[in-house]
Length: 301
Length: 151
Image 1 (cartoon, rainbow over the protein chains, first blue to last red):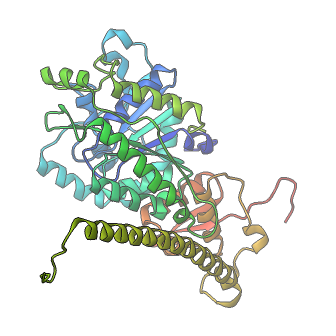
Image 2 (cartoon, chains in turn cyan, red):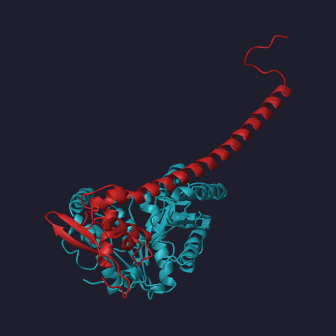
Image 3 (tube, rainbow over the protein chains, first blue to last red):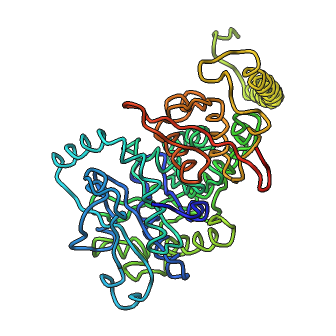
C-alpha cells in the first residue's frame, strides 16, 4: 500500500493517555469523539484496550464485532482496522453524525491472556500498525482519529507514542496520579511529542460505571492551581538535549463532579454523557469546551 | 523556679520561638530558591557540555557502522516538522550500512516499539529504506536532496 502524504494523517491523531488507570480516560475519549463529530469532524474512535475494552459499554453496543486485540492477533492485519458506521446503532437524535468506532468486546480472562501471548509474539504487527492506521484513515476519509489507550500493555502504547503529534493526558488529582504525571512528562518518549495537553478529572467511576467524586470541587480547584504551578516550574526539565521539546499545556477547565451528574448516575448505569443525551452538566460542558480548545488552538494540524 | 528540661515556660517565650522558627523557615525557602536557580544554571551548562561532546563524537570515535556516515551537511534536516522523526532520521543516518530498531533505541534512549514506529513512518515518508536480513530488519536513511540539487 502506498500512502501519499502521511504527514497530513499524522496530525489528525489524538492519543488519549493517562499516568494511571481508572481516571476517566475512556469516558473523556468517547465524549470528545462525540463532540468533535458534532462539530463536523469525521471522527473515528479506536479502543486499543486489549484486556478490558469499554467503548462498547459507553456506546451501548450489544454486538460490537471483532476487537482490536483480535485484529492484532490474527493474520488479517493488512486490512483496515475494523470500523463501522456507528450512526446506524445510535438513537435518532444524533444519527446523522459522522462518528465511527472500532468495536470492542469483553472476553473472559483466560481468553485475554491467551490473546496477550499471541500479541506478544507478533512484533511484525506492531511494525505494520502505522501503515495500516494511515491506510484506514485514507480509505475512510477520517478527519480525526482518537485512540483510547490502556496503561497496562506497554508495547501497544509505545506504538501510539511513536505515532502521534498530540497527546491528551487525563489525570486525576490524587497524590499517586500527580506524581506519576510528573514522571510521565519527564519521560523522553513523551516529551518528544510535539504537543501534550493535560486535563484533570474529578470524576471517577465505580465498577458499575456509576459516578463518584474524588474530592470536593473547591479543594480540587486549589489543587489544580498547585499542580499547574508545579508543572510549569518543571519546564526546564523538558530540555533533554539542549534543543526544543514538546510543549506541555494544561487545560484550564477541570472536569468536575456535579450533583446533576450524581443524581443521574444513581438511577442507571451511566454510559457516555453526551451519548446518553445528558449534555447539561459541568463534566459534559468541560468536554465540549475541550473539543473547542483542541480545534481553536491548532492541535489537529 | 526551676525549669524542667524540655518544657518551655510562659507564652511570651513560645511566641519568640515561633517567630524565630518562622524566620528560619523563610530563610530556608529563600536559600532553596537560590539553590534551585543555581541547579538550573549548572544543569544547563552540563547539557551544553554534553551536546558539545556528542557533536564531536562522530569525528573522534570509530564505530562499525558509523565509519562512513552520511555527510554532516546532509544530516542537517529532512523536511518534516516532527522533531522525533527528525531525531530518528539523524540517528539512522549515522549508520550507512543500516541499523536495527535496537541500535536506534540505544542511541535515542527511547522505547523499542516507539523507535520502531518512528522508523516505519520514515519508511512511509520515503526518508528511509527497510530490508530484512535473516531475522533482523535493517533500516537505512535516504539522504535528502532539495529539489534541483544533483548528486
